[in-house]
Length: 442
Image (cartoon, rainbow, N blue to C red; front, top):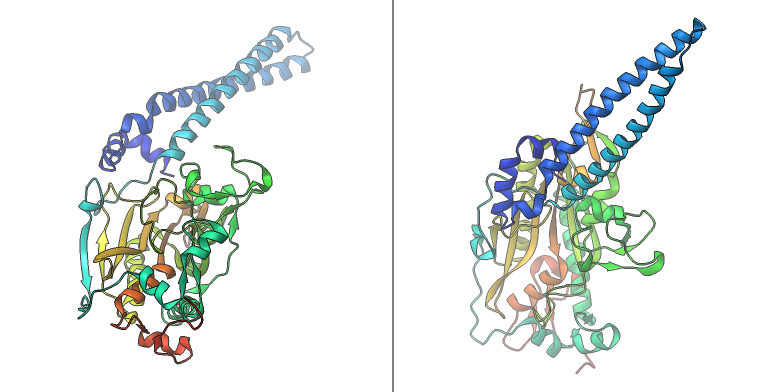
């Protein structure tokens, strides 16, 4: 969440930042100023009444010690008690209304984020690699994979429905090889600690990273604890994770870390589950938009003054995977209108897909600043400080395994339909250098 004190002190700036996201500030903030004023007035009156009550309590004690009549003071105390309870209820109501407003506000874009309305306004920051030139018509990954017998969308649909795929033979091994390669690179060379988190999380975890309550329809909710009730956060219900960002970021929920522990860098390989609500008709062919896919996720917990540099570093770590695999890509700085709900700044890495003749997002690397830390209550204690502060969180795909898989199929395809294996993956493929037709598959 955004800091309430910041919104109160910089309301005009917040309204302008929301406009750059394409939002109507009046609709987003509602009657924030009036509710906040009502809350503060109630608290001020409460403090005044409590001071009066305390004074009366002292007077009553003095009168009783003197064996004097304290009836009038006792009656005044009773009246004040009723008024205090009424004001406390009013303050609690305004607190809840403010909480609802703050929970639905997105993060504010950083000052270096370009202002724009859609993906067409994103800014290219970097272009890497040579786009391959073929002396034959390049095919998309679904045609290549099905012809080789390593991808089967029809049988997956029979088992689970649309937007699933079954991998066979060398194709299944390629998926595993990519995950192991990414993990080894990030652990050995980039200094991340591997984490194997649960694949199911509770509502509080999804709230902490910003998926709830706004994006409930994009998630898969398990019905073991009954239907999800918007606004009610539980710690005993279950959701399938949309990304490892959720369980890994929540590892330190409601904890205070020591400054000496930072930065903390985790990587995690997990399946991810997304309902793809609102994407009907989009990317219906192939592996671009699946209900289940695998990712190696990078998550960082850092000091606020380090988050910008750490964001650049994390993005470079994701880029290194593409460069080692020899996959052409570009780095895009997302504009204000295309950023995620929780992000203050995001780089998208887009890989070239010759079979589709376009760039596709393969990694999204975001700096959330203190937005997630406030929601999840993750703090750190600066050296020598008496009070703790909210740290900054960052995350990025390092990389999305399925999209890396299909990028290899399309960029390394050969005229006979076979697929060359990138050199860095050969040790993970048991020395095999080419993916050929899976025997016995049509």
